[in-house]
Image (tube, one colour):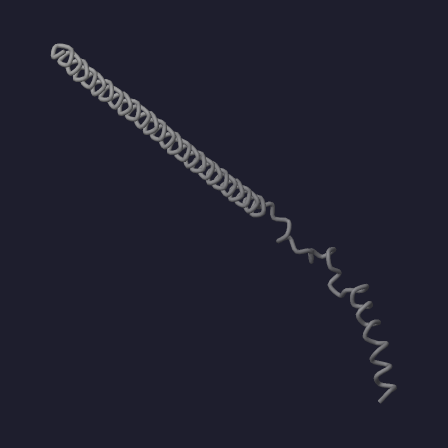
Length: 135
């Protein structure tokens, strides 16, 4: 059994090398070469062109999406800025209105006090003059 295995073990490589080294149909010499691979069709070139076109389309789409995102972010920033500016202006006007009302209120109070003081002085003067006449 061992002899048969050893013989088989050595014969397989020898037969394989012999078949390649001495082909029966003499391969390329008798036209055994397969000319299918010599076709000069542009299948591969078209495939590369298609892949290149797909890549370019994908890049354009990504660039447009990026621009759209940037535009939306800028719009959001602008609207936030405008909202803050409107809020500041509203607060400024409210403060101005409050200050103006406070000023008007103080002025009105001062006028009332001055009027009361004038009336008080008139009454006092009137009473003094009355006392002087009585004397």
